[in-house]
Image 1 (spheres, rainbow, N blue to C red):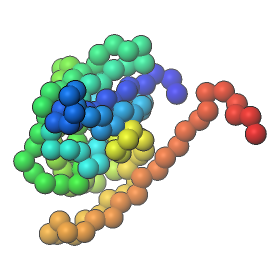
Image 2 (image 1 turned 60 degrees about the horizontal axis):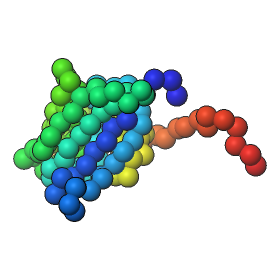
Image 3 (image 1 turned 30 degrees about the vertical axis):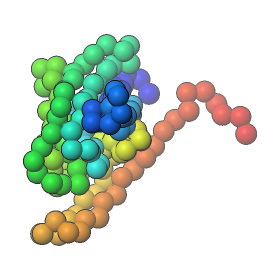
Image 4 (image 1 turned 180 degrees about the horizontal axis):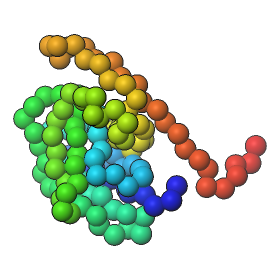
Length: 131
């Protein structure tokens, strides 16, 4: 992967220093969808050189939804809990633990009781793996 961002998402409510929710690497992106985000999080986004791109502290949102949309603007990260829409298809998705995939499809019912989604994962080894 060429240039990349590392998204570090922590729940400040657990343990003495909070608990890591996810730490994932993606291509540079101003929007990251996150599945099952805790009620409150701190987020830092750094580039491949380790320089801070953006951060957000104590990010919470009243809407109950299966995804959150984290958006970078002017060095800050904002959070919005969402039911993904067509515009979100093709965007990266960070899962608990740190795996990052691309949202390929999303469907939900009208009352928010049922949803179905597809995520694609791909990777490339930095050097050949021995078999």
